Length: 108
Image (cartoon, rainbow, N blue to C red; front, top):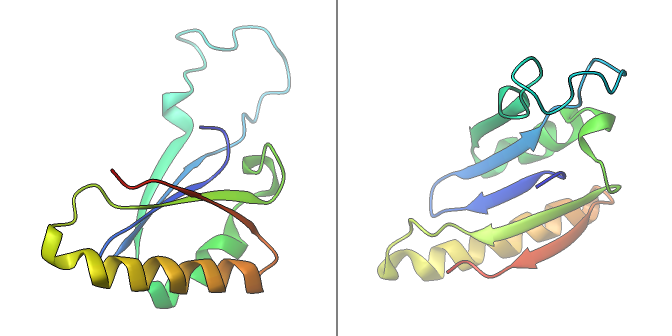
């Protein structure tokens, strides 16, 4: 996953991003010297903090432009599904207001 990804739960939102590689050279890319996993970040956010977090994502983390995947958290219980769905809809509205294209992925 090259672009940012959001997993929306009943109480929190998980933002996953892949930081851009600071080294512009292709030497050693993908090897033990420059692991992609070392650049991955996962943050737990509240809905109220989403706008600030999206604005703070560095330009290099948007590999395919300002497109973000949004999915319902697979960890949410069946009774939490209505709340999760409301949160997904709120997240999509906020992202659209920021000019970010949303691709909604299935949660389960």
